[in-house]
Length: 290
Image (tube, rainbow, N blue to C red):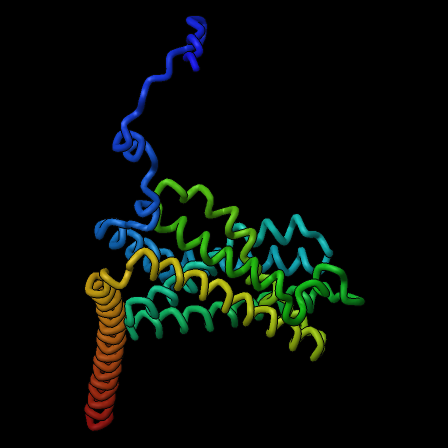
């Protein structure tokens, strides 16, 4: 059988070496590789972003007001606006990081921030709901009561995405979108609304919803931190947390010193006043004797 002649109009296929082809393909393992310097940067950024500062409290209160009003007026767009500006995600990520690196100080720090944030959000929502009471449970509130598997999966996926975005510098622009998916603030706000209306249905349902959303984000974050080998940054993480603890302790010590100095100054003033009174009394007695 003869060979079929090649049509000269057809393009010639140039052979590609197997090694060149392999090198041209993206290395999938690189996706799950993060340098030590990047790990340290992520740790520092997360700890700094979750620090209980004036900015943190301010943004938490403002986002709570927006979300609470959005729930009361049954407006999803307003609720999303509040979720975009809340700083509540970072303490959960630091909690997951603390578990991965086995740092008790970071775990306890994150738990305290989450509990304090819970109280602030619920308190703000309580005040808003007291000023603008709802007549009945609307659709936005009802959809965030109790355990919902799709919401849990969304929270889990958001935890994966948020942690991965924090770990990859080029993906930080995606964090606002992740914040929308993280449905943490609305259930907390509903807790405050439930307390203001003395409704066990709202209180129980929103608490369950918050716990499962928190658990979903936490599990997703733990998985990503583990896959990216953040346990290798254990020493740097412990050092950063201890440095923050020392700074806070120094601030407390300085505050105590100022109070002590103030008390000493007040005591000195009192002593001077007493001395002046004694002198005046002595002068009066001398005048009477004369």
